[in-house]
Length: 125
Image (cartoon, rainbow, N blue to C red; front, side, top):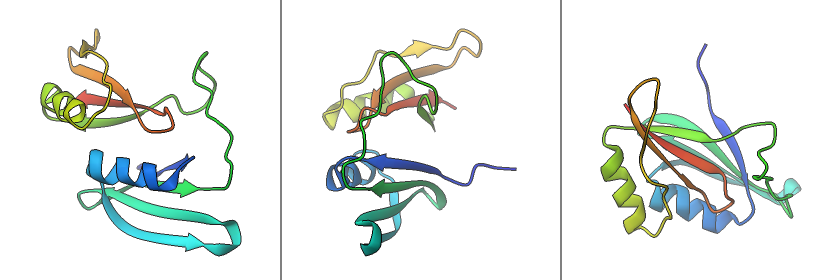
């Protein structure tokens, strides 16, 4: 068994589309407007691997973040060079946490967030 994709609902479709494609560099597979739902569905990939369905819906509720709630805690991407990725995202205007070391694996990682405050982790391969 493998993960097929991760679905994310955003509050501002154009802002999130720009974030995931222009800031994070994910590739668009397909974009569909579903009239009956007043909703966009954007399928995104890392390279050739389908990973994210980005949805827009009219007036979705805000995501609770503090205190942390049950459900998906964060989305993590693997990268070869954590320091380079962090600097790249800072150069694109993101606020990134400092790099930390995983006490169990010894690998580097850091967090930032998407436009709707979904925590995003970047973890050393």
